[in-house]
Length: 334
Ligand SMILES: Nc1nc2c(c(=O)[nH]1)N[C@H]1C(S)=C(S)[C@@H](COP(=O)(O)O)O[C@H]1N2
Ligand SMILES: [Mo]
Image (cartoon, rainbow, N blue to C red; front, side, top):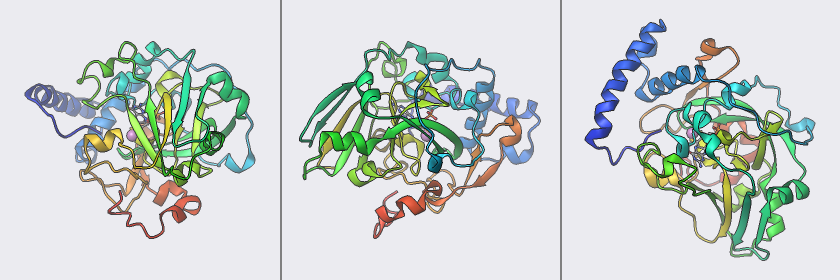
């Protein structure tokens, strides 16, 4: 995932060195010619994954209280904890998959407040204690599919976003929900420097239609692997929408605004022809630069898991969410 516009000479020169090094590394790892014919995005992705393996495992977050409702404990092979917390996209801390784990400890997650405003009868500001008091946490095992064609299976801990929205009482004018990440350049180097931050506009913003936000699959997550979120995963609270591409899962949220009009979203603003507002996982609608038909599952056995598996419509959650999109052209509304 890389903004295609705004390339300068400074971007191009390191990129060609990078390509050279990438070939060397892949060659040294003894990967086949088939690996070398992968599209560029998969190459870059593979390289950063190997680099990420050299980093120490990220420190886990604080313990959490939660239940494990049987219906949500999917019997799927989990992505190991050190990969969930060591291979991340969080451009506020850099573009390399290992950067967030290495850099996100500068994020101050204490005294966190989250504001709910806009088209609601009861605007609210809650701190994390209020969140834990009002909403019982539960573990849910969900698939996660990044738009870059890699995937994980992650045991989140969280609660349904719909419960928080119901508390704030959306008005009859509310049709969308807009989310905003913390803006704190002193804590987030990518917000200071457009090379570190990938040229995105900050704060990172995302959005859902209200019916998507109210779907019981949609979570606000506060933990992963039974512990509070590590900063690189979006501490202390982030969105989890398992049938959509990972970039919809906005991290470290400070504000939720109910709106009448569709809100702007960060990746859509960066490259509108590549990243849509809906971003529903769909093996039949390719990204302009790569296929979305298959994905590389990041599993427990390292390099052996650099294998592809078919991508499922709505990431395997069609039964729960396909009805939200009846009559909508999924190719046009990507
Ligand atoms: N604020 C913010 N949220 C973000 C991102 C980001 O760069 N900044 N990256 C997104 C992308 S592209 C993905 S795939 C997921 C990754 O979540 P994870 O690192 O917890 O697996 O976070 C999403 N949320
Ligand atoms: Mo992503």
